[in-house]
Amino acid sequence: MALADLTFSRTLKQTNKRIPSFPRLDRAHVLPLVVPVTLIALWQFGSSTGFISDRIMPSPVAVTQAFWSEAASGDLGHNILVSAGRALAGLLVGGTIGFLLGIINGVSKLSEQLTDTTLQMVRTIPHLALIPLVILWFGIGEEAKLFLTSLGVLFPIYLNTYHGVRNVDRDLLEMGRIYGMSRWSLFRKVIFPGALPSIFVGLRYALGIMWLTLIVSESIAASSGLGYMANNAREFMMTDVVVLALVIYALLGKLADVIARRLEGWTLSWNAAYQK
Amino acid sequence: MSLHIHERPATSPSAITTNGATRPDAASTTTQAVSLHLRGVEKRFGDNQVLRGIDLDIEAGQFVAIVGKSGCGKSTLLRLLVGLDQHTGGEIAFRGEDGNPAKADARIVFQEPRLLPWFNVAKNVAVGLGEGVDKDEARTKALAALWEVHLRNKAEEWPSQLSGGQRQRVALARALVSRPGLLVLDEPLGALDALTRISMQTLIARVWRELGFTAVLVTHDVSEAVHLADRVIVLDEGRISLDLAIPQPHPRKHGDAELAELEGKLLAAILKDR
Image (cartoon, rainbow over the protein chains, first blue to last red):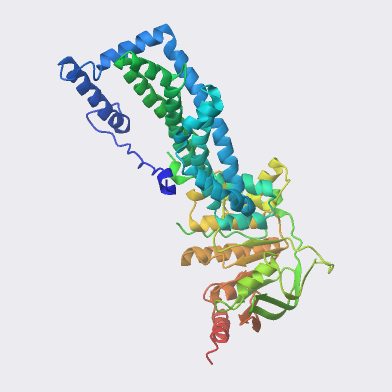
């Protein structure tokens, strides 16, 4: 995976021009919904007319019903909470390690020379390939999931933090030194804010990997969580619950991205690219 | 950007600014200017000798401009004065106005403003105060310094919202906020357009008259040197080839005939086209 793969291109700023046919709604709010709503309508139409078989793909109405029954029994809420807890724990552990390594290697030549080559080598191993080994080490308990998720989020955060620190403007560092900043001040006032846009890119990429890893490890060995719910439903041919799980992944992924964007907008308000 | 020429009498300690604020007291704190004494200063990078024995005395409160072709060693000399590099020979000493050895407390303004984009204007200026200054005190001093450069009303803005000339004025305020005894300017106006440059020259001249620090300006613009400085030094291949006093009183007018004559003399010395 090249570094370029780990960076998102920022979407163009949405225009705020109003269109006359929607007097109260912004074009920016309506346009993103057009495609998903149309697709769902077509899907329901296909299911209702019998064009799409129930055994292949349940109708949106059936998925909604599955949602109600799962939610009413309390299983859905429980599984979402369990998965979210695992995801956050993995993000916290892996993210902290990746962040600290990125900062230290960005600042210290010695540490960089000592560890960067190793990290770059380990990074290229698909972490899901470790599943057999991880099950041997940790069994099928929480440790295995935490280990895999942490490992998955570690590298994008490490790479982007390191990249961000290394690319802090040398002129600003020199300025900081002339004005007598201590090492801590230099980090707090120059290096960290300078690296922050890049760290956020790493965080958003890590959020995607976090869900992916968690779902895969939950499908293989778990007795609760969204991945378990979907996998269990597959065994009983309950396609509606399988699709429900997919919809929830999509919503959770969107939620994580919205939170990351809010954080970006809040901490990077100085940056013209993030100004509203 | 629009042209900012704000002239006001230097003698009025409580003049009214355009935005109605009175002059803050902190701005009128006097500066302890230092004098500079260089003896046989040399600097070499490997085999390349950039400075070949500079002897130079600069009185406290004097405004000296250093001009010369690119590669003559003028920026190297500046970096030695502010301690960014160490000289490889000779000695550099600073004395206070009382004649005793003093710490230089030099500040530098670069060609680029080098502002922290994630700090607002006031916090950027406060960086110039160094470590361990009380927050409220830092803010008061920063606002006073911004007042000096006529940017008091921009204190809460991001640097990205300012024009090039305004950013450079913020950099000047940051350099002046600690009331340095020596201010070093490394082609500070080189990146600005011609009209902004003229208004910045007026601003620098006024701030220097009011605060009384020693100023050393490196520039490739001979007319700028003649307009601002009491004394212009021409560097050539690491040596001083001309040391010319500019006796005209401040403030000076652009386009003055006597200044133009001195300018011609300096250009001839730099280009050696006799």
